[in-house]
Length: 180
Image 1 (cartoon, rainbow, N blue to C red):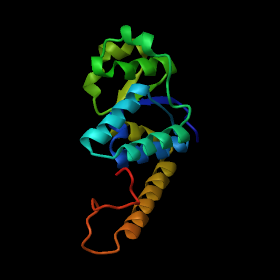
Image 2 (image 1 turned 135 degrees about the vertical axis):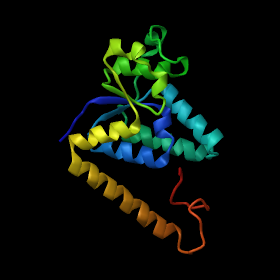
Image 3 (image 1 turned 60 degrees about the vertical axis):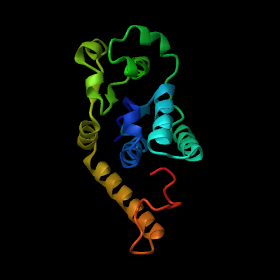
Image 4 (image 1 turned 90 degrees about the vertical axis):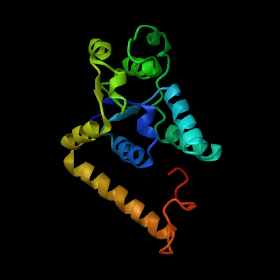
């Protein structure tokens, strides 16, 4: 079952690797259509480099992969809408992009940045990632369970390949995870 509804992903959803992986695996299976703004990708890049200390090469690789696998995710020409939205100024690009692409939802940890007074007019639902994933589960429970098992198996395999010694920590340098 394909849902094919657009949902805008805030940068905070794309930063944690495991959450990003889960949500984008759902998008690959067409449970929803991921959308983001150029500011979202810029914020993602800044956060990965400056807060999580990822190298410019790691960040560029991730951005390349996002663009390659989700070529239609970038919303363009939403900037004029930024002047009429009334949510948190730092996240106006997210709401403007959602309006421009006809998104049904914005997925964010920053739910308070999108008060009902700013979003009701546009009929866009603001969802915490937990709520969003539960909704996807109700759309296709078997597929969500399969995706989670697939992701767990991939991580387990990667861990076995990367950690042949008992005393190694997951954060020790491991080429299998270019963007943890």
